[in-house]
Structure formats: structure tokens, C-alpha cells
Amino acid sequence: MIRNEQEYREASERIEAERNRLDAHRKSLSESGLGDTELARAMEPLVSFHEQLREEVAHYENLKRGVFPDLQNLRGLGVLLVSLRIARGITQRELAAKLDVHESQVSRDERNEYHGVTLDRANRILDALDVRLQTTVVEAPLGRETTDA
Image 1 (cartoon, helix red, strand yellow):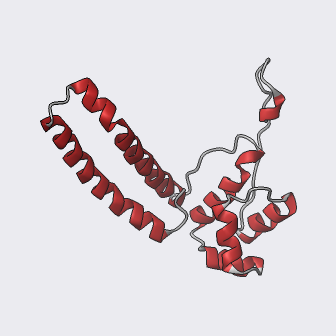
Image 2: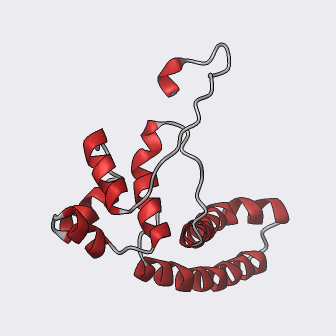
């Protein structure tokens, strides 16, 4: 997950470099005599990495516009907290100051996607970001295990 403008710039630049690398690799493999099926199979890991990078950049751009996916369960709370900070345009340093903690603590927490964050701490972060969460509760379809919710 891209967490700041520097990572965003680096990822955006890397997309172009990866695209050029993909084209060169595809050309080289094609010239070596690989057929279409073999070429596609050989290129798949590189193409998959390139697509993942593009998705991360697109996700960050959506966050900057304040568009982010719905929280499906509390396991996604940590990613949501990071996403909300990005959407609000607040740096890790600014959030740390609002929480009265060191910037390295926010960086570490975000790197771990706030794994194991307490509800009290999550509320402090939401308050520092000046956001409020609204929930919609829906029943899980019959037959679905409740451990996923």
C-alpha cells in the first residue's frame, strides 16, 4: 500500500520503467522463438507485478480524492485508518503531533496496518483525523461462517 507522496511518486515512475522493461523483455522472448502461449506464460509474473503496481497507484489516487472501499469487517480497520489519513491529506508527522506520539510510531503502526489496534486507539485516530464512521450492518448469507465477520 502506498502511504505517502514520496512512495506515490516512486511508484508512478516505476510504472513507466516497468512498462519499458516489459516491452523489452517481451521483444527479447519473442525474438528467441517462443510461441504466443509460451510467451504469455513467461511474461505473466512480470505483467502481474506491473498490474499490481498500477492498482496501488490507482488506489492511492482514489484515496487522495476521498474515495475508498467500504469496510467489510473490523479486520480492515487498520487499512481504513491509513486510507483516511491519506484522504484527509494529513502526513504521518501531522497525525503523530495530533496524537502526541513520535512520527516513527505512526509510521510503524501504518506499516503494520494498525494490526491489533484497540478500539480506544482507533477512536483517538479517528478523532485526530476529524472523521466519523457510519456503519451498516447486514446479515451474512445463510451457510457462511460467522468467523469472517
